[in-house]
Image 1 (cartoon, rainbow, N blue to C red):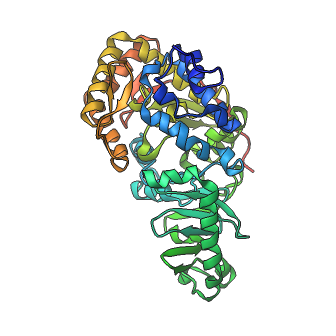
Image 2 (cartoon, rainbow, N blue to C red; image 1 turned 120 degrees about the vertical axis):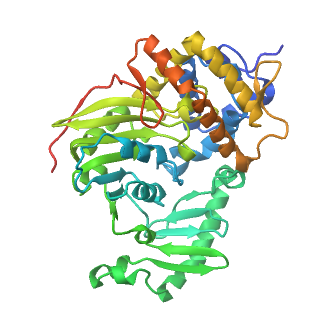
Image 3 (cartoon, rainbow, N blue to C red; image 1 turned 180 degrees about the horizontal axis):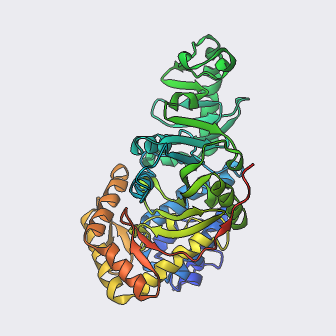
Length: 455
């Protein structure tokens, strides 16, 4: 049999995982043609897979498709180094539930929740406000941008105050996600829409004018429409409410009341580990004593969620819990391997946990066999005679895939496999438990952080 050339993706897979993918899977990734940052991302992914003893036969067609179609247009290198947008309803619902179920004092007075790095549109901040009844909610981000353009089918793009294109976000279906494959064409299309609609703003009335005083009326929101497209000026104003405030600020400069809970999801992963530690300490300063900070990453609907919970204790920030969803153990997608820096401490800890669970044969055999059965049952993947996973014949349409995968993992959890994973980790010497939202949790080995003075 001919060996793949040394520069091919399959050669890297064999180097790290000890075996080759079927050629029809590996051929989807033209490794030599990828940008350098994407190549480094894939190499880091394979290193983490190797650390977990991930077998090459557990690659899924979804993972291959994400590497070949999504990652080249999704990493910061595709956005001039800027963290790409990905803000979706209910993405952080599990984190909101964790905050609700946290053992707060009986009389929590005027509780404050801060969504740090909330992004735009701040959909998850509004989700938090709905979940946290009686809380004051603050969404903080370094930039909310001045303009947003919506196409008729829901795709949108943001522009800065000078009308310069910043980024776009498609609908999260197959047709929308394919926009990442042709960013230059998409950019030109949105720029044309912007140029067509922008002159109309001068004639448009202010929205929420009753909320604007004379001194800030220049920040009022305005909306114009034409040919099914919409342009909004100062769109963040449309998301404000009595209990929801948005602050455009760097993390360390945010002027918020002492927070009982801070959520910082899908933000710190873009920074070097040393910078991340400094940012955590600065965010910790914003906490009230005994307040909690939750930092981590996930995908749409909270899939493959991983997060660390910190608690403020006087002048230190103590890591009390590292938690992961059960779907990280044998993932369908790229998320458990998503890291932009070598030796990312959270990604490395996640890999350690996965490896320890995989090593527990009494648990793993039953878990992985049951997962194969349910993947076929839910029309996701089927394991063929060669040992590899393939899409089922006439399998889930793209629009249904995420929902079917979510139902699959809910069934796995209902069958008690999270408890089994906790038992496996305790047998391996971890202090492990199932946390209030049903995730696998361990006592992390991260160091406490000394908090600087609040300026």
